[in-house]
Amino acid sequence: MVQGEMTTWVLATLIWLAISYAVNIPLSLLGNLVAYGSILGQEFGSKSQEFSASGLLISLGFSALGSFLTYPLQAGLFYMGLKQVRGERIQPGDIFGGYRFTVNVFVAYLLMGLLIVISFVLFIIPSFFVAGALAFAPLLVMDKRMNGIEAIQESYNALKSHAWSMFAFVFVVGLVASLGVCACGIGILVTYPVFMVGIALTYHNFFPPVQADGYYQPIGIAPPM
Image (tube, rainbow, N blue to C red; front, side):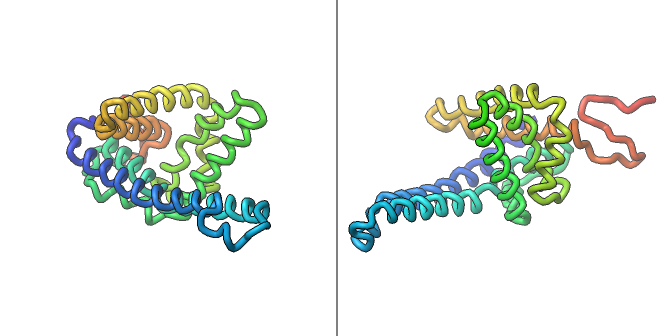
């Protein structure tokens, strides 16, 4: 499926990588400089502990800003995958579609991260369940125009009975995508789109569009006669 639109996917992935690095690297460096006192150390003087706390908060703020600016790009890639699964035309510019829902996309990703971390702290195994159950949240924001909280709830309701298998699927497909980094980083231009389309295909089977006759038709499943 990806092969038929390989040029489009390569260009979109390059855009995602270029913007993500251009945004996150400077913000990360600046945040680290502030956190370790390289910029404001002279001003705080002996109040090093107070500065350390302030610096850490500032560093986290820079990190959050980077996520706020780049998460919509990842959501745009997911939605590109969904468009292709549904037989719609895709183009590299689709990656910017997530910026129409920047706040809701950020909230969805933020809640996903917080819930996974909390479940990991409480006990490691439940974090895998949570990761699987919330996998559809970004796509629900994009596809169903839900806010971040609604998307988290809807994803959990849809996947709570399939959370373990969904986590296993995401893990395997994500592992395949990460192998692209091993090929001098170039392989990710091919493997990452496979990851996006794989998640989108699974999402489509849970949330297929309504057909003209009102029948919900998942990929690969014929309507009843």
